[in-house]
Every structure is written in C-alpha cells, then in structure tokens.
Image (cartoon, rainbow, N blue to C red):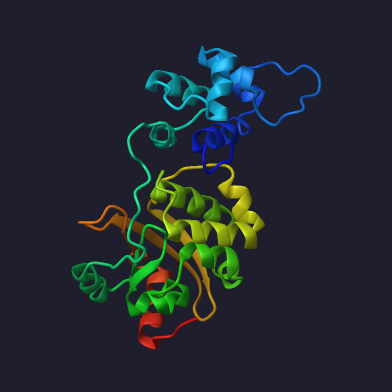
Length: 273
C-alpha cells in the first residue's frame, strides 16, 4: 500500500525510525539492522500487541482509539502538536477537502501591510507570497508576490547566501508546511509543489520523509543582505483574521540596533536584491 493511500502507516514508520533504542530505554545487544525502533518494540512499549501495531502500519486497521494513539505518541516521543497531527491522520472524519487553487489575501490586510514601516508579506496555506510591501521586496525580491517560500528555499541558490542559518531554517520550514497543510493532501497545488520539490531537491525529500510537524511560529532571524550586510530581525507570524491558513509575516528590528539603521537605509534606497 502506498504512502498516499496509507498516511497513518507512513507517519508511524517515519517517526519510529527517528527514535533510538537508547532514547526509548531499550538495551542494545549486538548489531541492529533497522534504524530506530522495531515495530514489536513500539508495540510492547505502547501496551498493544505486535500484530495490532503491524496492522496499523500496513493500513489494515483504520480506526485506532485515541488512547492507543496517545500511547504510541508517548513511545515515539511526539510533542503535543505532532500528537494532534497523528490523531487527525487516524480520524474517521472527512479530511481531504479540496480547496480553491488560488488564494487571495484580504483587501484589508493588503492595505495594512502597505502602511507598515517594516518588511511584511502575506503567506498562504502552501507558503505562496500573496501580498507584500515594498520594504519586504527590498529586503529580498523572493518575498514578492508570486514567489513560493518553499520552492525558493530549496531551488534558488540565492536563499543559501541570504540565510546564514539555512540548514536550520529549512527544517522548520518543511515542518511548518506540513502543519499548515495538515491531512488535506489531495489539493492539486499541494500535489504539484511536493512532487516538484521531491524530484528537484534531495534535501526536501529527506526532510519531508521525516514527517516532522511544527507551528509556523515567530523567531529571531539572521540575514546576509548584498547591499547592507548582516541583519538580525524578529519575525512575527500572525494568523490573518477570517482565513484558516494565511499568515501575516512581519520582520522588525530591535529598537536602536544597527539592523534598524540598515532597514531605514533600504527603505530610502528602495533597492531589491
């Protein structure tokens, strides 16, 4: 059974391979032929039979109880967000809802970012840039409308130069993308994007196969701008009211910092990189 038709099994396999026996409290004797935990070890630690766990991974049991899944989540050392994702995968409620291919940022939000004194843009469900102010594109042209943050990170070499912490950033980006999409994976936009990146980027394929889930959260970010040099900005990601997935992304400097001065210079120059 393919991963597409058995997302719960794909998730369980990927996550158990990430948990070492030592982390799970299992003594290691001799050479192990599998990465992470064996199926029977997950079953034993979860308090269920090995046969039942095998049926879950193979997609032959589609209705596990929340109690069983929460036991498995503890063994797999999942955090609260990822446990919720696991419960959604196994839910019997309709999950695959086709969404409109084209997302449009609310006019009020577009007007808001136009008046902000900081770089700001609207990011859609699939990390498409739906609206941006001039200072955002002065910070990076890849923050402009029509770009996709996921595609640019993995396929545009300029992103590696722009983000000194690129390796860390891509891990959180992929995990945030999975959280944003959730279990609605039959949308043509999702299929097209994941298919393209899986073929074009080995790094994306490796990270996507981990099934990591993380919130699209605020963070401190470092940039290396070709005109003004090093910048350290605070990134805020705020859910756009009236939508279920769009995020308002704002980058702002600490008051009185050199990055504040450099942003002011970018604003006066109106340059793109």
